[in-house]
Image (cartoon, rainbow, N blue to C red; front, side):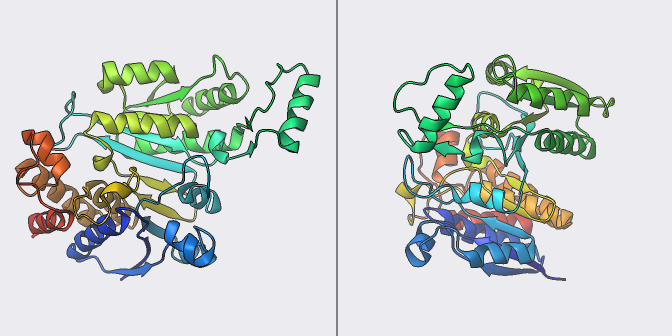
Length: 361
């Protein structure tokens, strides 16, 4: 039976790495009915929005999508397409495995940990007020009247919502993930020593949920101590569950432990929909040059196949990626440089996909 999957190529290197990913998935023999739709900068030019209605409708209909990176303007322009998709479909769980792969140069070996990030709340909810706006001034005056500290003139204000429901479902997801994957420990990451209302709520709920999983070890750590601990001894961690902003930052730190974002896949999971994507950005400076590393996108597709209960195909992709990287001959420039100190002998994006496909034969 064919699986209906929406493919959003994205922009920058997105079209190149999603092409490579699609070829690898098709080579598994799993029948995928791809529905290709555009989002991002190109869609903005054509439709006046980076996330057109027909894209949302397509994802809602299939329930499964995989996307390439989409450029998000810094400090101006449209908001993140990734955030908009997560909010539109309540994709509350962002799952980012960080696993040591052959050929990935890192200070550490045998890393195998998973970031579970709450995806819909926290400062990423995007509730912001521009400096000098009526709303910002009114909020500042209200807070000052109620004993809040004075705001400097012209302050911009962001609001950090953390709910019991959102906290409970993400921590429960982390424990259920740990149980289903045979993992031994969950670490709840927070800043409850300072943000006593918001992160304090997250921590209280995490402790309540942990009590229902006595077979799984539980600890909580302040986010700055977590970052230090990950650098000093990442093997001390297994599954980490975090509010949205900390999860975004710590997941990139963990990607650095296993060779960088080019090796880091990701999934965004909700009750009705799932969207899979590499965790890296669109790298417009190398777009169109056939040199981007598609490993993270290909491994995100393996996560997608697991979601579709195509576990054997997912395993074959992971084994083929590992074999290609371990061999070290048909790899992209970033990996080649890590292995040899030079890019000599590196292959392009599509040639790397060819090598992965060959290792599945």
